[in-house]
Image 1: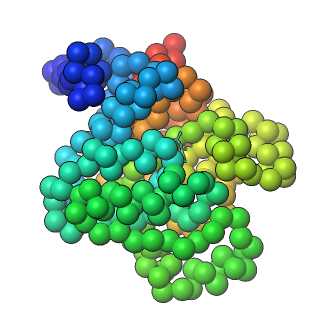
Image 2: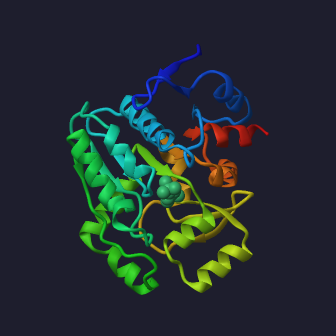
Length: 263
Ligand code: G3H
């Protein structure tokens, strides 16, 4: 593939994206993923870099979509930016929350994010009314609810999943997890988190938030998984995530993470 350079919309004087050349190419030699994109800079140092990650995700997702596609959507602050860059292009798109509540503030919950994505793409969305960390019994009876059943089925047959990756302890703090969960994460040496699954440096599951929806084992059945992350503090999380990521993953990261993966 030839080199492709895209000028950032927000900082047109800077070349923000490097996709098929340099860093991305070296990464592709080391990691057998479907595709890898690298945005220059550090998303934690520069808000424009985080926007570029979201813009790239919106762009690549639009390329992959076709009319009537179902997309599973995870939460987080990076995912919350994606709708800003999504444009209507395909009819009857349907965005569904990948999992129920994870203890996030509303703006970072997938219920909010799917609504914004659907509005931007002029598509449809579904809401999943499932709180986080409820009892096994309540979880089971919720699963029997027709509205919840529908979301579970949609997630099973969705073609794509889009999600962020976070630092494990940072995500735990943000979601104000209880002492016991914090102990499990610390003792299990969790380094990364993605849609409620916490994993260690070997990509092994340490803890999962008890809620409804997509499971890690469902990922390799998707046409593509779009995973996005940027920022120095997430470099170990992304490195670990790549140990569990299926080959149908399209990884969108910033330069600081890319360099760490190659170090
Ligand atoms: O589930 C959330 C992600 O793991 C990361 O969230 O994009 O706000 O860093 P973030």
